[in-house]
Image (cartoon, rainbow, N blue to C red; front, side, top):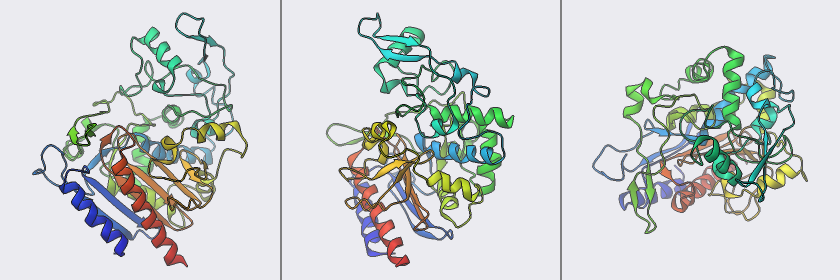
Length: 402
């Protein structure tokens, strides 16, 4: 184990003993499937340190780390001719095509007006968050619409889609960038294209082939998986860790492709390793290349709007003041070497509101995962660990290639 990674493991152990960090798993794998690094530290619960320790087989609510799985599920459908990246999805998703466009209007009763929206949202626009679909909590107008029509300002995490997450568009397709439930629409699309539930499709085409036995959209379906679930925690203003915080709906009504998965670090690392190995077992070479390809042209308004989202996108561990980033399919991709954070070009990465973060580099043939359960998103102590870990993994991989 390289000294930098050993030092990190020692410091994490001290931090979890002192209650400064919740239980956390750090793991990295190379393209051959060899473990580069694996370390689990701390108890399952911050309220009972005497409980069993966290491990690579502990189960985490992935939140938006689900989006990678959904993207990987969608791309073979393109190869099979079931759908195309750049053709309208109106016939497959008529509910999406029927959504109106919402706009702020201070003179209106509830602060917004509705207009007819252009039709023709595409799969590529859903996978790059340029569809106009947004999470309600990110738009005052959507919160007002939800309150008026459904009785409360935000329904993004209640465990069902229709009647909760199907809200008006906030811009015309392709005209901007906004984080939202686009990948949940993709999950619905895949279910309709395949004729099976989205969870069954993922099990057949992703989880079972990779041996991901601790991954599910529905905890109620497996006592074994539920028994390994890591409880959520949050940090008080004074810096102490306490039980509680954000919880996904359990049981979930729908298979939510944007946020609904539970998985272990061991399972998720199998998925990441498949992306960085020479030939993916899940995706064609063309689709792997598309996945890692910057999708938003330089100078494009969507790219500028994406970059304004800052830490939500490239993760709270990238300390670069102006990160060199773009959007791949389903995740952010770095377009140059980011010196401050040590994140090289060509890295695909994303994170989840509940704490997990991942990154994958085909160029270096390595991927890493940090798994923990803490909300709200952006805990500075977890972020510092993630950046140190990321730098060490990529530095080691780069040194081995030189």
